[in-house]
Image 1: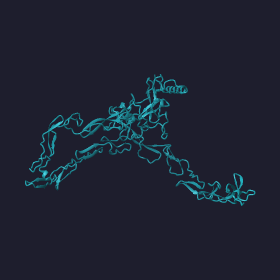
Image 2: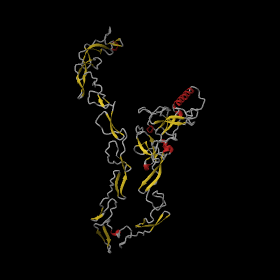
Image 3: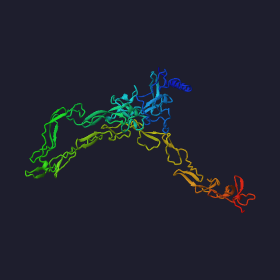
Image 4: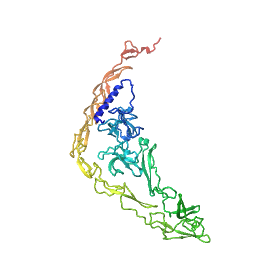
Length: 593
């Protein structure tokens, strides 16, 4: 039985109300087992994927609250949970790094979540806010690894030798990919179909807690000039592992498929080989390979003797006796045991680098010349020369190919080919110099659409909040230039903007509480001197009385006449008045006996 969304919302509200009523009574039934009830009484499984461990990955899901709202309160949407009982809505779903509370939806959901249908265990359909990026950047081998149940749309994106990782379907016009990800067009390697997917902009995907718990894997490749070996890498406790594939090397006679081409010991039976001992290495050819061991017809090296024979098989004769280490000299020994070294001029030699083509002996030294030209005139390859392998023309995807002259196309190298794809609609293009037009690319062409309602500057500093209207910058309200200072005159000069001149002798309110009547001078408000005022004057140890005075420009009230102190009838010493009671201090003065 299927419920439409509105009926389902009403049903959940009814169940929630019933639960609140039951809270007022003594609990005599079983506790909520972590699943909400469906319309026919069956349990609803709210888990997504197959893991239930970990905490919420706020960075991966883009927290559902506003930017500065802080972590969600316990039990509310986006808060961590372990079961449905932990959530106010009784809806706990799997996120990339744990479970979080969610809610029923009709169409829209908070950032990082999408409104998707979910089947209950009873077969009913429920619409929930489910994490949109649950599978993002997970290691994968096929598209179903990146989609929930029988859903599709997310693609297992190949990143070459490093493996394949889940993308999330996105809208090219209004992408909502998380930070460090962008909406890019990718081709499904199995179907050949293109789609827009959220993929990581740089670096290698990191393992989420969920991916580590599941031990997710992807195929990877170690590749070099000898061949290509395939293995896998997986999410482990320490994160994404290195590629567990053999590193290809030249095939040897060892019973191992060294270059990963599917054959073992598949090298030329007449391949060069050596016999090596303490005196040197002599070269021959392989005449057999049995049980991973070669049989070589090379002679055994012997100690060098002055006999005109290359006894130690190093390519030189008698060099062990008279060798001066220079390939451009001919070293020989005389029958009397003396050495002679004849300098060879113009003789072809080898400087050991394939990047030089004509090496010759010059003044007894082997000098490389005529550098190998490796430029293939393709702007989308990186050209270099390896001394051991020669020219290397590596297809590049980050080089810049020639500009096609169109401002709304990109000039990019992809896999060694020069391409000119259109820039995304809305991309900036050549500025037409008008502040109230939007210079953007549309369908590969640069357009200048008039804008309205956006801020602009009409060139007059005496207007503010100028706005664009139908491509024109219209002036806003006049700038009053009020600096809130009563001692300045405020005006706006269209050439220079706001100006503030001192308004001396203008009455103002001074900051003094005793002398608030003020006058302006030099742009500041001072208390007006000689104004009548009233102040408190201390007349004895405990008392102060009001006294009339006049104001000084400093704001202080100066008493004109200080009242006399208090007197006590019959008091011979000091009389004070504390708390309104006169007290004579005669008792403090000792009297004569």
